[in-house]
Amino acid sequence: MTTNSELTKTAARTPEATLREVIEALAPIERAAGSEGERRAAHWIADRLTAAGAPARVEEAKFRGDFAGVVGALAAAGAAAGIAATTRRGRRIGALAGAAVAGLIADDISNGARPFRKLVRPERTTWNVVAEAGDPDAERTIVVLAHHDAAQTGFIFDPRMQEQLIDRLPGIVERVDTSLPMWWPVLAGPLLATAGGITGRRGLARAGAVISAGAAATMADIQRGPTVPGANDNLTAVAVIVALAEALAARPVEGLRIQLVSVGAEEVLQGGIYGYCERHLAAMDREKTFFLNVETVGGPSLALLEGEGCVVMEDYFDRPFRDLIGEVARREGIPLRRGMRARTSTDSVVPSRMGVPTATVVAIDRYKALSNYHRMTDTPENLCWPTVACATDLAEHVVRELAPAPAAASG
Image (cartoon, rainbow, N blue to C red; front, side):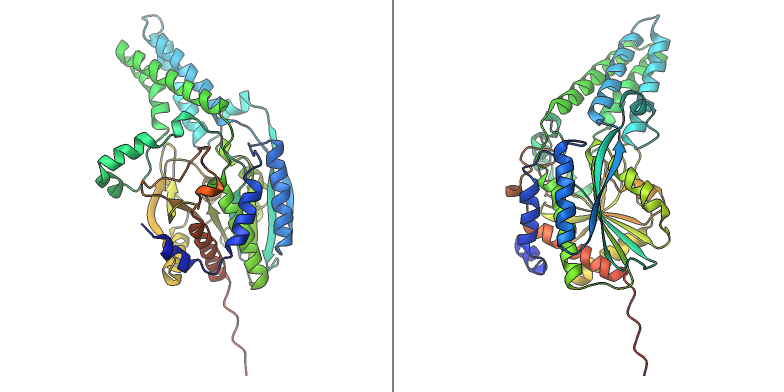
């Protein structure tokens, strides 16, 4: 684990005052997806980026949410399927319904077609911030991404049980670089209902009903939960792009177009990112575009995610881009752990599936978890500020690495 003194030495170039200004200004604003607070935050960020030297605008985008209500309704249907599968007459319909529910949940949490969400959730408005820096006419582009909405909390995000288990079995956390599959139990309920209906084993069907009922209750708890301050997740990234804008204004980059973007509605399992990609990324040359997602970088140690997947793990497109980031970190003396993969989703999944070289930088604690993840304790006071500064330095070095080398003077 990287020490604070090591991080402080590495992050000497990034002024902590800028990072603190941004995070402490925005954390008190309640920024649920699609809320008035999220809109206020977007306009504040746009004004701050413009003042930092990167002219920014706020763009409206559409999303459908929330995920907790959608998945909760499906889990309740899974419980009903399990109950039906315990009866002789209901076995067949319980099995079919369980399979359908499992498929719809897997589709929704994996950023699929989302037919159920489209059926039950109307479109709402979120607000994306898009700022321009560097050379607007350059052939090569890098997008540095943040998100400014904040999550709702729930009892499921209490990390104490997981931490106690890891403290008792520390070797496990050292051997596993993929986070726990949080969504698999939600899928297990309707799948057990299906298995019980097919085989006639009522015990399986009952287990499926109980697990699905528990998942529905968990989603209801999240849906009722308050919105967290979101200092780590993900105002740290917003602060990174503002500090990066200041650095690029002070030391301009030539031959590279740079977009500094903060999207809304990420916490509904991706919302505003779709509008950004449709409006901007789809028109870019995917052979000359790179996507760096900064996500929750206020923990003790920086890490580079290799991929993500709520159901099936997907490595991000184009490993050479991730290798380039790793080499830049090594060369600049920035501690960066490789090999991590997440079972939760980030906005990176959308550009990666579009075939754009994509990478995600996060910060993890000794349990290989995100600090204060979706907890009311996600406040500025609980951030590891040197890590946020290191993330800013890493982003700046990657940007400069992608800029073409200046032509040698003739003569």
